[in-house]
Image (cartoon, rainbow, N blue to C red; front, top):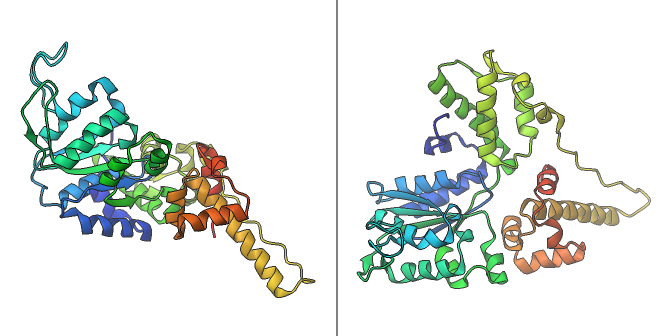
Length: 345
């Protein structure tokens, strides 16, 4: 395995979108404010969490990461808050939970949208009262912990559906930071590829200096549904196969070179029409294409789509009504999202 993608990689990023994210991270890092990181899987939310901790006054204290989706519901409370000996069958000794282990430091709750309503209520109590009890215990334990949560779910939509508590959402959503997918920050693709090559060279001792032109072009054209994680894995595989000083097409999957983003079809120009009519038609075509790409990229999530477009939720709904677009059409359809978001403007 190559060295983990770490905070040093953030220095390689060149896109304005990630510079904006980095600025937000710096502005909130040295506070105790709760941060909610939003974005697709593999965009680097975990690395940004570590950066938040490293830039904070808690940097010398523990950083504890907990993936909520990997723990059965029956064990979640014990993992978060700990348990006393004899609290339940199999509890042969006292167990310290993540909150206790992260005391005075940072606790990262990844994929927070996967926990049950019952667990959400217990977590809300800790955030409100800043104290908790171990399972089977009576002692009230202080919780001086900075919380950072992350999710690739639309928590606001989950609130509307009744699967996520609104009061907990408001507690977590104090300082939201949206991390854009890799396909929307193409300036970062080659910089990250070079970073991964440098890491692999240091680990394995080969001297691969870069990418052949055709490879670089293919990486820029690809939609990256798996984001940075997919890019990292692809570069590692190519590195291990490559025998020349540069990564060549033969070391990468053939399908990477078969995909090219479709070009945006131009609006037909009818010179028998007044200029105003032609201009209106062109604007409407651009709006429709933009909305389809936007909703596909965000899988129909209205609040996130509106934020990305810089309009209110009501304005977005009005535009969708104008062009007869239904958000359900774009939900849970990653293939369509990858394809439609490849359009450039």
